[in-house]
Image (cartoon, rainbow, N blue to C red; front, top):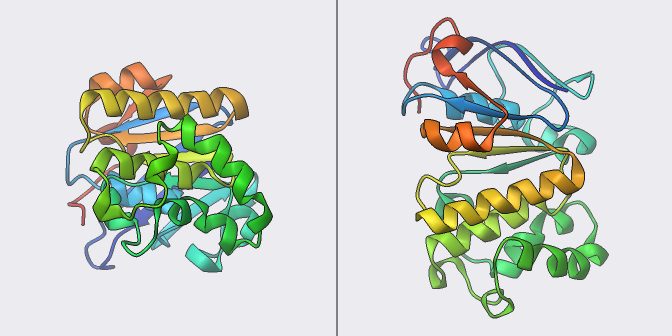
Length: 224
């Protein structure tokens, strides 16, 4: 289970962007978190991805409370979650070739020997072609770069996947292809999914249930 209990979080303790939010995601479950821009849902997604320490509340991952965040989190917790962000150009190092971007988590966890096999598996599954792997972010389209970012999120075989507005900047065909790649991965692994967005039709088609932001939290003010 991925459990968030009474989460209050933000970037200024005097003005949190999330207040008292509670959400539980079961193994294999797909939940859509629906809300307008600026409501705080991306901040909550970062908390769920262990990328932002909440000001109050508890995150429990597979029965274990989370006590450290970002690079300080234990490896087994940190690698259990894959995150795909809305803007691939802000989440990709512009100096890296796509092959290095995708394999970066394997290098960081000392699993260099796994790189050839994982690239061979993931590159076609997300719709990339081998000729793109030597290119850098400025040499590919937004859609191609987001495909690489999805592959990076999947490369460690996470048990939980968080997609924060993953498709909002993409054309319809690329968005559909990325959703299909996520669903193929979930079908093969049983991973749980938290899909964050403001497109109610997409989330309702993609996810087993959709949680509306106003029903999730008692109050939310703004989003950085």
